Image (cartoon, rainbow, N blue to C red):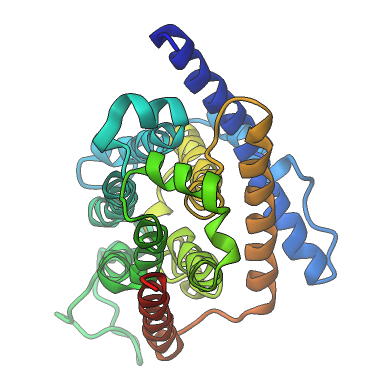
Length: 328
């Protein structure tokens, strides 16, 4: 296959991914509403309409350190997630060789997580600005007391998520590598064409459960909405994104949902997002995963530290057991 044809396949697959991903937030919100016996929004509202709406909003300067850099971080996230999708396309797996491996998948996903730390570090929202005069009413904050921004709390949460929150997810990614004796994506896919999908093995089944829970943590979905702090009635590092920058973030987050499904489809089903009829498999996986996330989110309370830590430790132990089983 010549290089122009390969580029055409990559572009075609990305166009399909861009169209599908913007409908996934609507499917998630609609499914969550149905579980909670609500009507919910229109399917196109949370993804398609929201993106278009924000592109036509007035752009204001955020109250942030390095506001231009802060506003560019959603675009960086979108570029990272797009790069992750591209290396999953079979034509790229073959052409790029060693780069299209689990190391690249883990590195790009980890970089996507790190960007939230930067968002939290740069943002200084107006909601937590110091008052122009000390509040001396009874029960108010004492003079000279230590004050902090909401985003500083979010940055601390983001560091915790990066250090151990998403650990089970990354361990689950290496179950297919152990079963195929390779970290190359093309080899992992090729082995499953012969032996069948890893999903239908005991390590694959356990890995699927761990992958799903870990991916919910990466997506910041309930009950693991730890980063954005919905219980604090704020959105953490996302609070000051507005207009077109908010639209880019919505696109990046929606694409991350679809790309996560593509990662699972590639590693556990041997069906990468190739431009053609087989593209329907990652699409179906993304819809199923989105609806499953919605059901869990609708039925779960928001975890506190007392629930979050034991859950992550328990899922990590299960992931390690699955990796050990994959050796046999």
